[in-house]
Length: 97
Image 1 (tube, rainbow, N blue to C red):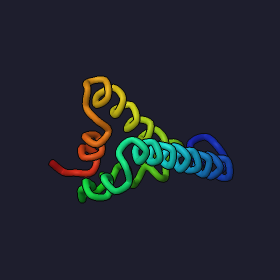
Image 2 (cartoon, rainbow, N blue to C red):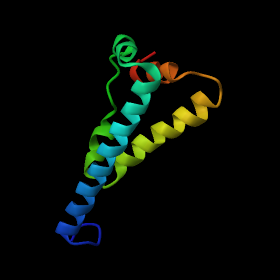
Image 3 (tube, one colour):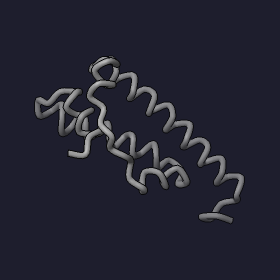
Image 4 (cartoon, rainbow, N blue to C red):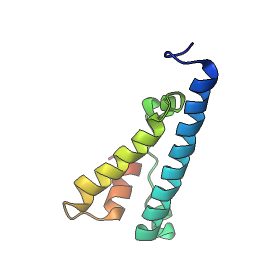
């Protein structure tokens, strides 16, 4: 047993969580590319790497999905509600400085 459930149930939760993350990530990417533009996103993308915690969250059910939803929340509450643009959010997410 893992975390109080059988192994096959745990693996099913992981697969379902990754599927939801994939769906949310694709929808968030489509949303950003619609508001920024693909060409502009490619030109302004930095070289910031994801933290180790984000990479390890693949093994925790629904963690990647929650990280994606956290990024959507940051976009809405911090950037859009304060008058910043989608492009400024993209630069913030992809650049180190």
